[in-house]
Image (cartoon, rainbow, N blue to C red):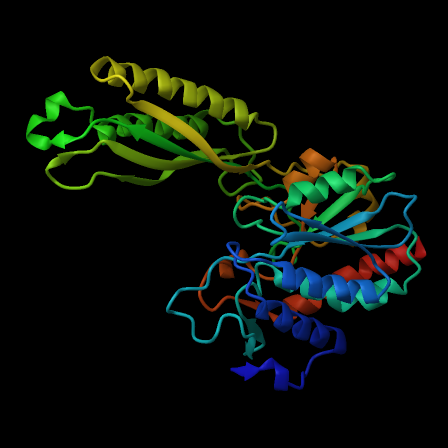
Length: 398
């Protein structure tokens, strides 16, 4: 492994700039449970020094923030380049190097966030000096959000800000890792938690108790049955690898000992939806069905028992933007089509809240995300820079 601070690069200058920017971005530990302000301030200073119009949108605590850096005119519809600044934890013992100290080996740059998705941000920073002096005919909005990994929590404020501009953007490119292929759809997600409250006692007197796990299992069966219905009945979109919505239980916790009837049980479950569905209505109907099936027999036995639900987070699906005016303007510049994906991004947020159609194009493979020894191939950074520069050139000559 090579310490980037002491590296002379064998690739072109812009790619070398991107690698150095990426090393600096990786050094900021922006795991979602921590502040991203130092990274945001670093990027804001960089873009601001280039003449960008800087807007920082902090959360209610001030510990986290979104960044918008705008270049070009303000009186015409432009394009968004968007990414998130948070990363998942890097606690796995399999890491072969410090996850927050970028390293290069075999033309791959390693570090937490290198692929998902600080690599895209680094490419944007490498291109920014050319962008700032390009004489753009349409604006480019560089947008970087907080807490995408835990439910796209920062992106709505950016979408609302952009939607309220005198002339909002007409198109967005989300830099999630796609191997620099064009992704034209993304599933939405609703993550839920159910709390089942029963009564405890010595298990030898089980008939006198309300077993929380027993009744939670009835909820699990209905959740699973709804997932099977999506699989059989759709709706379907064959552009996805899994061409329909999915629903499943992902975690279940309850009980304290082998000889105690459990008085509580908690389970988490999720719905991943495709564009064209009404996932909120589907979820509401399911929760009502579960409540009506589970709560009455529990309360008949012991008042105060039952089930309640809480939403952990949700984000909308990203629809297919290929028929929109924004997409058509940039269609000749976009890479080969790569299908649609089941992982999340802020694309659906921009579409739903901001009215901005979006696609995903970014460096790296999703297969490397959220894993020990995460990396992005240097070649992917170079391809991304070429792509972004193509947009800058187009908007300088349009």
